[in-house]
Length: 153
Image (cartoon, rainbow, N blue to C red; front, top):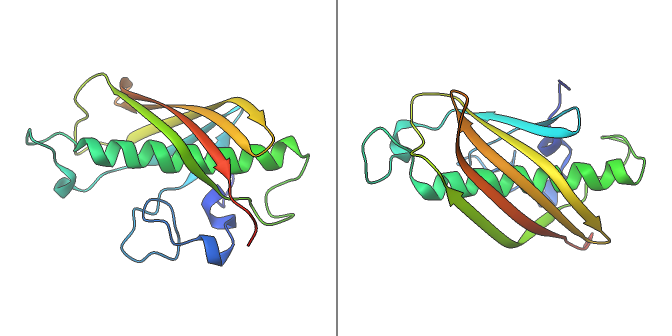
């Protein structure tokens, strides 16, 4: 995997997101990378991200991880589509226009979660991404996201 994550290439003015902003001291600081045609992120949630059932993740943290990993994947894919390597120009930022999460199984805490993203479509400023979230090889949640590229300013 690359040493620098997609999120490390966000311009400073767009690097404050709670989930993925490197400049948000209180954020999750997720990191996403290419793994062939898919993107991958590994994240170990803190015990305080528990949901209604002790030992299992709160649904909101699952949605946040899927959202931020999907947005980072859209950003990197847009550059890739333009034939530009990471670091050659500022990474475009995307925000969710639509996010759908299906919770398939309880997501355990105390283990590293794996998120995998796939680009379904790039059409101008709109990118559609699918993301799976797994724990110990078991898919616990699936997300579908439509993301829109925000203007440079």
